[in-house]
Length: 417
Image 1 (spheres, one colour):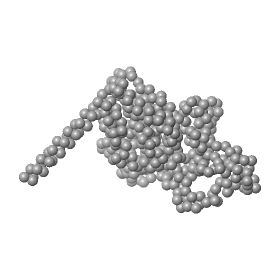
Image 2 (cartoon, one colour):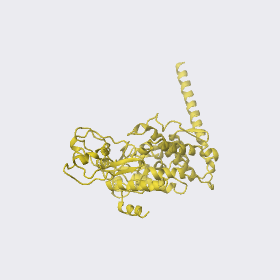
Image 3 (cartoon, rainbow, N blue to C red):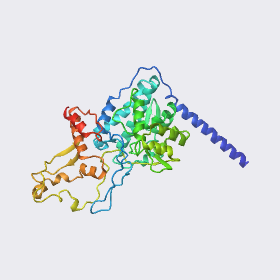
Image 4 (tube, rainbow, N blue to C red):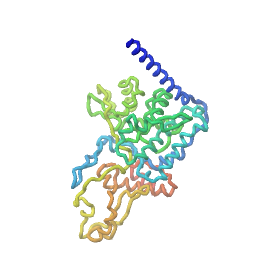
């Protein structure tokens, strides 16, 4: 009798599992159709304006490691960074979204995109148009959710089971969806498990694919995915081949193993298709792949960096010549209303005159942060100021060009505007 009961329970569980899978399949079936000859397109001008203004492209990885962080005088505490990856990846100016008006802009774009298929079903768009739509909806939702918890520094928790990635926070065509539903139940299946998909899904972390400074469209989507794949794979946050036997790769691939059915073989082939230079040979020579490269830090610019300690001997005012030093102007560099660096004012930055401008240094300057992290040089910060000036002159729209490669060339273009 007991055996009969156990068998009955197992059969019921199997029936329940089959029904659940069938219901899940039916839930997403509405998003599987498309019109190959559709002429309808979706405009992303509002989202484009946000990305153009608030994304800071960092350029192609040089594979350089960051300098070791040092504790300041008066403390043993220091900022903990991943030296292998902290200099890499595009940044999003989360710092600017402390302003509720900016927050509302992101939320409005998110709701507008989610509601779009209520006007015209997605099945009436082409496959490429739908791909761009899902990537943009996913990314703007991630940004909106991260703004709500900012300034959280490390985002490892968002990949836990109870995070917003797993919660049904969207509704599209009457179907409640989570971000993981979009990634694994819609995109992975609709686009035949194409690994390029994962490079279009922004995670908010340095260790993930870049957020672009433009929206995806049907015309650019595969070109941009390919470019983002090459950028990520040929960076320290994507691959690293120091050990001859084991080739290290991002844990992103382990989280997306559904795109690599024969994981080691398929991942190796995918990486070799995009790897450049000596790292390609390192992968070919390696006997195994280890998915252990992580960087969970949020991709902000400077807002989550903390200042520890600091004795009198390291204070900028204390280091000034009391009998007269270089002249200071009281100049401040601004970006989106944030003071990035301050300089004391007065005819001389020494003695009583120096003290007159001391209030300008109450907060840690951006140049000091740049010096500690190695992310931004003084020239790059000056360029940010110029970009901000242009942005204000053009009603909030400016394309932020890569500032890590050719500062002199960009400065020349800005001066000719």
